[in-house]
Length: 402
Image 1 (tube, rainbow, N blue to C red):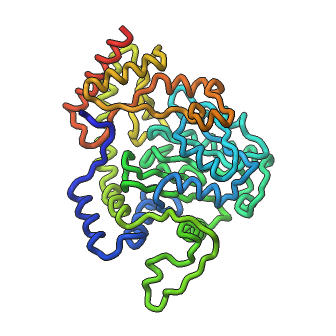
Image 2 (image 1 turned 30 degrees about the horizontal axis):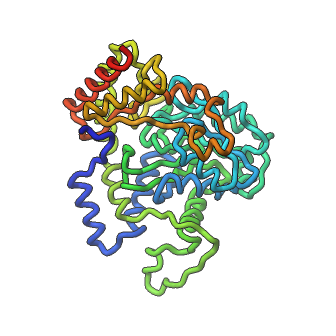
Image 3 (image 1 turned 60 degrees about the vertical axis):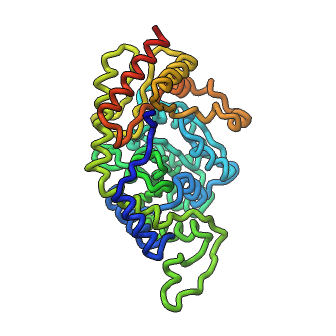
């Protein structure tokens, strides 16, 4: 069976994790701090905080910005539930909007229609490794600055809607010469096991706030907020006579330990030279094979302004129903090839349907979803396995829609 997306764990990763295990320091410490600095250097943003998940990162920023009951957060209907759940956790209202037909990403025109005086945050989602139209989104929040109603000190400082990018899929992607993480106010990466860069579990908050914000000061505050509100971390407390600490707020517990950061440091070192090139090679093989068929709608992953990080090869089958797509997937699995669907849109989930959301209000989202099949893309997928995937997809599609 060809798996969908196993992590690339080699001896170098094993050796680095072993060093951490034998070092006597396995929780948040020197490797996590180094990983944060290296991420900041790579992405070109102003400061980076590593946490135990992207979900924690998204929620902690909403809470830092003062998002609460009565507020609205605009996000695409086409996303994983984490993007919406964190809004619900804060007591705010997720305002879903439809996406583009060409690249799965949030429609800027639909964002504009959804902005009200209650809008506090826009959360674009970079689908599959292709970043959103950040120049247009960044301009939009300036355009509607006078409509913004500030309730917290942070909101008063920014004076407009915050852009909080769900960049879970887009680490390493490029937009107009700049890397994801440096494209808007704040971006949050996922380092989950299936992501291009993994720390097993984990996430990174890339701070890139404009003046008058001091991003380093925000970083230091978030370190406290994500460690129970404790004003010293465990590493600081090991210094001679430095045991005493204080709790300055009722914070959260979502720090990244050094074990995870050790994996991330190895992954980051080889990201451009191995990971990105290897994934691009697989994308090009898929393109070459499927471009021969009229039923194949290939994913957009490279344009004049954008270069994807090749996270998902989201193939769409033209003219099929959701039921036919599901039948094709079953056939592919019968060829011992694992595929997936990204994503079942959030308004289709039982919890959100009970909140009154209806997928019929997001026709492009549903059309994209109903025809989408995500194909395997990972470093250990050699050319012979790629051919097996291609052959399985072609045979399965032709069997179902013949």
